[in-house]
Length: 274
Ligand SMILES: [Zn+2]
Image (tube, rainbow, N blue to C red):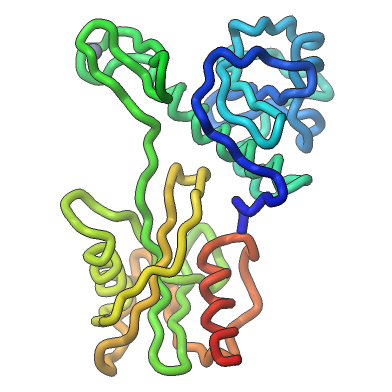
């Protein structure tokens, strides 16, 4: 999946004091846009320092992959013919893939830093916490952690069949039912509610499959399988979905992004017959 970068290791230990090195990467972030070299490479510290005269105190340490660190730069720079702002969604199809994962994760943090410059409670300017990844309000003491929204992804099965759906807009291939967990509900509640809302079916035997950090929606995806409780007609939620259809495990369509949790779950269901 997208986050599987082995043998490289992602290390998000919060370390403010690590000084930038020449071959570390700089993520110059503004409003979901990141500065890239010819839209396909992140600038190194060495390049960024030479190009924009950036100084280490403009760089916020984010995380490390093996020995390579990533620094966020919130300053707005002037693009030129080689370097310009590119939507952070470009990291979905980035080469090499581990840099795409790093860039997406950096952009997730970039958005969090950008949208938490001031305290939502008293309006005072926030400052980075010294010990953990958080922003502190020196005026009222409020502490803000990075936002990660829980999302459930549900593979509804009935014997050898699995239910695949299509959205009206956005991601177009067949996929699994999914939705955000809401205040006051368990993940299992969210699974039951989403399935009921989107296709009007009741389910049982909900069991956990696996998870995927998904920076593009500031989410943590959590995958579950569940069995159809009793035969019913699908009642499609027409505001969100264009289609919901049962597929035999040997006959699921070969479409969609291969690095997402929903795809891996479809494959797991298909292979379970072997
Ligand atoms: Zn405050």
